[in-house]
Figure 1 (tube, rainbow, N blue to C red):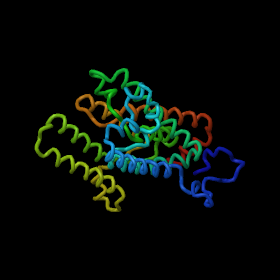
Figure 2: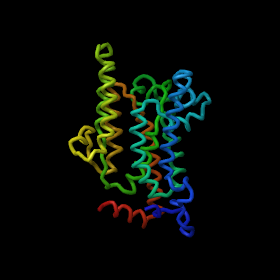
Figure 3: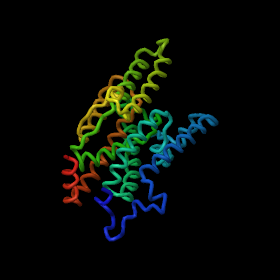
Figure 4: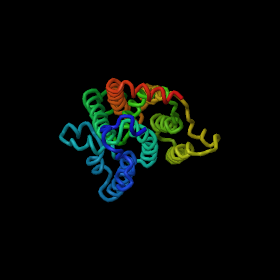
Length: 290
């Protein structure tokens, strides 16, 4: 599959040159390693210099960005603060990213991933900066808030697959999303509940347990994560629109606009590939109908 859209068909396959460790390991896996290393670095820095200073240097805040902190567009989608967030995104990236990388090629994947991450962050920042006040804050988030995570780039990868392999089956892991919604509901409407701190710890454990449960060979254990099978074209829609609607009622710690921005650039790039490589795109689409 690494030859679907290979950049130079006259050169021998360089993607899996075992004499070079950088070629042996996929770029997706290198990106995962980088995310993990940055998470460790950020955790150490938070301990020594405090969270606010770390957020300034690594996270994305529209107000700070448009005050000149351009680097935030690059650092934010490699940064995670909450370990379950890192775990969920990296497991998703492992499967989705390696899949896309094998389809479009190593170099094209790296260029696209970087552009998609920046575009998703900029899309969120512009909308939040201009419309993130009053009722708009419920949809676009406040421009003073900080955002981190690889989710925008992940949705961009889903956008490519929604075009090239629209009917391949995937699972939406609904459990963690439901847990976040419940946690946000209780924190917003019942902030003084005595057991809320304990409940938040339990939610974190459930979040981690549900992620690991999907790797179980036991179908009953896998149900802990509440996996919902659907065609890949439907997944980003289900993962964005309901959360935007819920966000109108209670604040969610989810960057829906970054997800949407990533999805849009992924759809655009998928359409570009489909138009440029019509025959190969048709072959891929048919292949994943099996």
